[in-house]
Image (tube, rainbow, N blue to C red):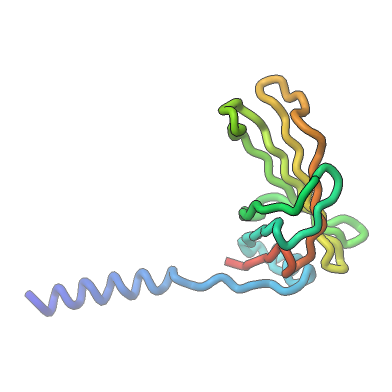
Length: 144
């Protein structure tokens, strides 16, 4: 009885450890593009407190968040571009659409922009907000 319980627990521990691979941080745009080109899943972590406010942003950011890169494109100049769009609600409980765009230049500079639209009309709710970040300075990439 004890032996079969031990074997069952050992098997579960092994199965869990197989899936517990840590994410590997990618340190350059070239590393990110190579991983994407191989079909590897890539996660992005954003910390606006480490970025410089740009157009539409009146103060340093405090938001942190993340996403997995789904679709992307690499432009002729080497810029990696990807985006996320999703419906959510604003502070007043009104439905909105947020469109988040990331442009990563070959020199590691990253431009993050956010546009917010009221739903269901898709009228612009506020002017575009932008932040200037850099790879490993406000934005980090991880291969899962």
